[in-house]
Image 1 (spheres, rainbow, N blue to C red):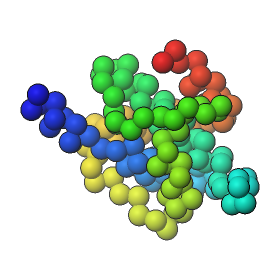
Image 2 (image 1 turned 120 degrees about the vertical axis):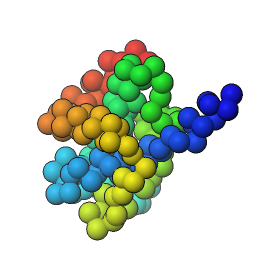
Image 3 (image 1 turned 90 degrees about the vertical axis):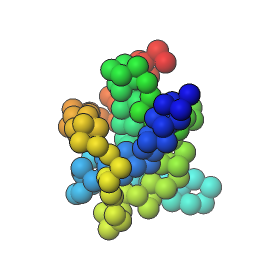
Image 4 (image 1 turned 30 degrees about the vertical axis):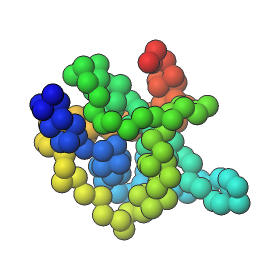
Length: 139
């Protein structure tokens, strides 16, 4: 039981992984912050937020397939266009600002390499292709 507890406490949050993905796109070419939607009277960025949550979902799927365990403990909330991590979705407007620090101190080098590979492979996918990829996962 003690080893399991240690494994959980060392796990880095989905939010930290999201920050790392954002740090890989300082010019915001992938995580665009220009398209806005009005939801309940507030302008909310949707395009980059969708992409970021899709990458987190893909990362979780591929890591689980490779290692047999989840990369982060946060659960995805189900929506029509796929799952979201609420904290990432909610804080996207703050996270996407290149002025904000996107530290990756808690990520080891092998995890960074894994995340970089995922980012580089999927960064050219359209939003629809990312959505399709995620929806094809039986989980």
